[in-house]
Length: 402
Image 1 (cartoon, one colour):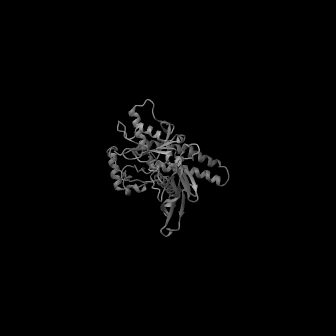
Image 2 (cartoon, helix red, strand yellow):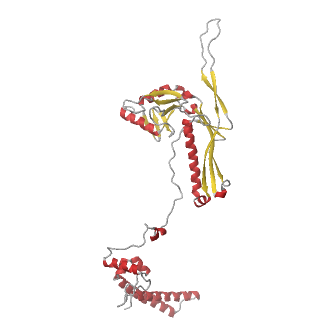
Image 3 (tube, rainbow, N blue to C red):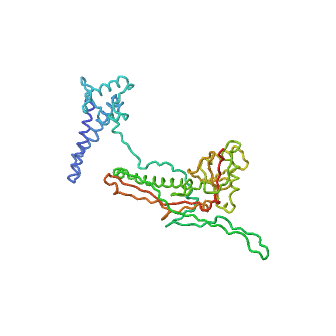
């Protein structure tokens, strides 16, 4: 009886011959003759099905075909099974002695012990062939919370601007008949809104810019955030000399409070006292400014006080304290002894920011200065200044030092 390999060869020969009959007729642009049709029918309808049935019967009882169906289809495991032949001498592929030993061990143990040579863990044993894909979008970090620019008045400038301010009220006095009028004149002050340069620089190699198109956009976004976070800190803590003037230390004194009876550094009563220090003229657009950690301290104080009417509420994505909206800035100090963690007031009337030439952050791509090193230079900068223009419009909450 022919072995499996011989049957497969016969089937391949039969189907190839049938295909040649059809191809020959097509190439001559004619129909197949009666003789060709008879030969085609004999091969496809009679001989081929018989061979396929015999092949299926042998494969059904073939152990290797059961264990490795995918390899059996490709013919890699077809062996010469004639009596006296070496069962490990493949007609299609000559197996190595190491493979034969591992394969025999697998057969003897019924598949309980197998030896795998190629795997991902070691570079030389297959790791080098494992494909690696790097997504073209770099996962960003969340920026620090910033609010001053949204709260303050922001204007474009083309030169320094001097703002006259009213420092003190004039006074009125009673006037007796035939006597001169009394009273005093108001006092006028002035502050200057200038512009101070600040920025950042990054360098990218030509290779990186070419191989990773998204990297240049990533660097630009990163520099824009760096600039904004730098300025936010100045708007809160700046000295005002060669840089923006910060809110802290330059607004109304507000209140200085002790921690509450539960040990919370910021108390509910203290925030109510702070509201009382703000002139009613600034209530319409008043809001709170604090770090998010400070807001947690206030909410904890509310829970521990067990207030019937909660003073801290949230509607949608906006937080409110005593009915006034709360904004967050990571540049604000945390709640600690001696710190000023909360500001309250009308920031649009109390603080002004001037951006020279417009509020956009300028980005420049320089491909010449470091061209001999194969580097592209990215610059981001803005000229800006910030000043407290009405200190009484914003009041501060300070925690007692001791």
